[in-house]
Amino acid sequence: MTQSASAEESITYTIETGPDVSFAAVARDIYHAWDECHRPGSDLHREALEMGLVAADADVNAPRGISVSKSSAGMDHSTVELVVTILTGSAAVNAVGRGAATVCEDLWKTVILPRVQQKFGVGVLKERRKDEKTREERSGDE
Image (tube, rainbow, N blue to C red; front, side, top):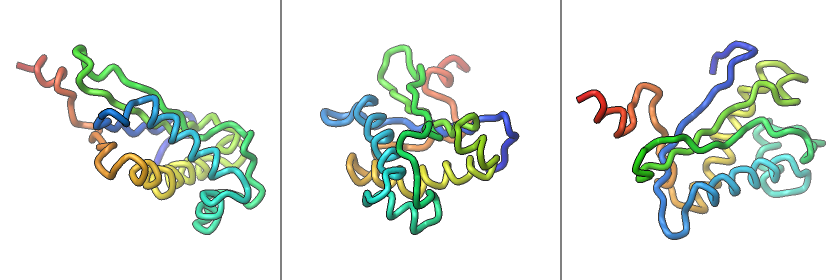
C-alpha cells in the first residue's frame, strides 16, 4: 500500500445482510477483533504477534488504527456497504510512521477479516473495487 502521510486508505465492502448479519453486528465484531489483537494473552494477540503485526506489550486502550463506517450506498437501502478506513492519524501511525498504516492494513486483511468471515461466512463481505460503481450510480449513467 502506498500512501502519503496525511492520506487515509479506505476499503469498501458490500455486506450480504441476513437475519444474523447486519452492519452493526459486523462492525461490532471488527472492533472486538481489533481490541483482542491488542490484548496481550488473547488468542488473536498471539496470532498477530506471531505474524509480527502487534507488539508483545500491545495496549488495548490505545487508539484503534482502523475505523468502520456505513456508506450511503443506496437510496432504497437494499445495498449496505461497510467502509474500513486505515487511520493515519492514529497513535500507532504517529509513533511509528507510515509503515504502521501498512501494518494496520495487514492486520485487517490477515487476522481480522478472516475472523469476521469465519464468524459470518466467507461471502459476508465482498470487496468493491475502487472503480466499481454502486447500482444507483450505474442507473444514473443511463
